[in-house]
Length: 203
Image (cartoon, rainbow, N blue to C red; front, side, top):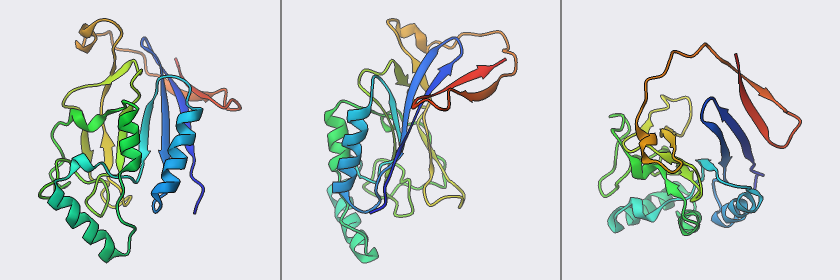
């Protein structure tokens, strides 16, 4: 089994504040390893964050029973391990918010199979890539902003995107206010020797 890692970054967003990201790619074959990996990420996670990446676990609620049966059969024919959903069940029990629940229009080339409520993100037509927000995150997903785009052959996974907005106490944060045109900013990485990279805009 290959060792997998998590990239943890704190992004300093101008006039908004910091947002913590955990980006990972869990084991592609063994759900038991994936559970160990996600547990290690959870135990080392300090505070509100967005978790994104190839979790390689399925969410049973994405599929009808008939579609799930088809997926199991298809995976068997391809010589892949039986699909599992333990990681996603665990994350949902931890009250993570799923970006998929804020779905908008999908790119037409990313097809949805019959009996499946979401676009697949890999060549098998299943969703294995996620963007999730921890229950205490001050950043919420914007309704209608989640979408999946074709990677056009640059990867065997498609591109998953969702917009986030900071929500403190007022729901009016969702209102887009006109702002002065900002000066062009260059993003540089500072404190690279730290275990926590902080990306700050340089004016």
